[in-house]
Image 1 (tube, rainbow, N blue to C red):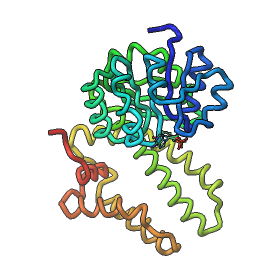
Image 2: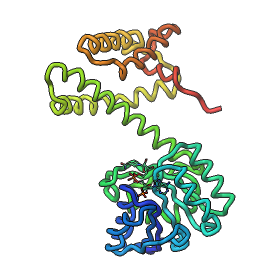
Image 3: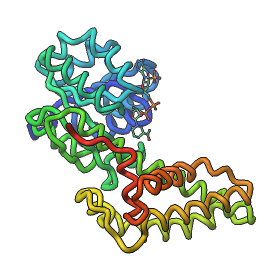
Image 4: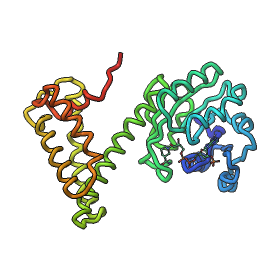
Length: 291
Ligand code: FVH
């Protein structure tokens, strides 16, 4: 399907509104529904059609995009209109866990609904720009059918038939993002004790972190091979570094809550006799392997 087919967007929060706007601007007839109807006013002024009910919304288009707070809200909205959704495609943009995505996919399959799950790697202003990425998994035929419309939102990345994979990857990337921001904030608290502004620290931190990302493939090679043999940056070396960071933080009056867990994971590896191995071995304390 390559023409400007109708699209329905259910949920017009910060993300849903931008998604509907991008589709509308590209020429897709867009039907929109939101729990608080007034949030659709701008879009209606721009040419969208307001649906008065969820049933009316989902029967207006072959492609129904859902972007609400969570999966509980999604189920509240979609379950009563399962019959109307049969034969259509639902793209679930709402953030949730892989288990929630798989359960919703199973429900959709029972109801004859084509289901695609998505992880949105974007903030509202990024929607429709080249910095925006949307991750997808689930029903591949449905994804391919509507790919031209989905590509309008950002670069599409396909992860396979397991509906939980887009969410798994999304949350894994967000984990990296949150720990990076938390690390920055810990550093800002440390230098803040000497009167250095967070803005000044951000310049140094950005440069340092960008340089450090170059070592991710080396970390990955340890993890993927399971061989942590190294003659640099061992567990023992890094445990000593974390001891210093934690002590310095405490000395400066900064709570070590963000860095102490890394110290603890290194201590565990050391206690288990892996002091000579690579820092990356801490993943062995937290991961489970596929059965
Ligand atoms: N905003 C962001 O930067 C991030 C980017 C990455 C992905 N997240 C997730 O995207 C989902 C939607 O987020 P959002 O930013 O659009 O969220 P809000 O602006 O808070 O809008 C929430 C919409 O959900 C509607 N809603 C909430 N509960 C219900 C319900 N029980 N029944 C029906 N609709 C519901 C709400 O309606 P209203 O309050 O306007 O009536 C909004 O339309 C989300 O999963 C993020 O985690 C965003």
